[in-house]
Length: 200
Image 1 (cartoon, helix red, strand yellow):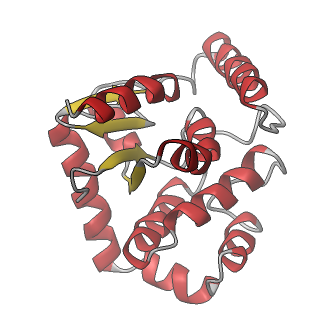
Image 2 (image 1 turned 135 degrees about the horizontal axis):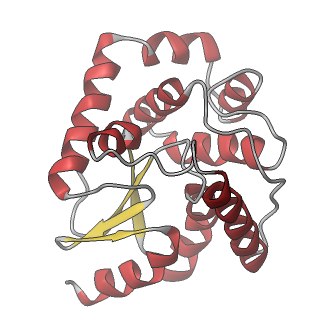
């Protein structure tokens, strides 16, 4: 759980717009002094419960999404080779690794590394070679991490995080939560920061 000084960053690796937030939170922290609590969860489960399948069967909307991410990435000075492989075949594994990383203190570094390989190098997150290369980059042994990520304990933690997100009213990623309010979308980060600064 985040304390009152942190702003919760709820995300699922697999969300395209999350690339934009993941790539700029470190700079935002340096500029504002705000600390983010990285909270991976299963957005697919919640979206399926809502019968919300946004892009897989909607090519016109998917094309818009990729162009929108490309425009916003350029605005922030971020590299992006789009469209990236989508949707992820190993969505759950990518996010279970993030759950483990959150417990062990290397979540943010792993998520930034895996998104960079996904959106810049075209290597699908959660699959090889992205998974092993990203883990080695952040000083982790892939065999150890994957074994733990596939354990019952991490599965339970993943489900618990998703349940917590659901109870907060979170329905998409990325979402920022602070002082009882949620702000959905990378384009709401600045609003979340302003709400956080005023203390609600």
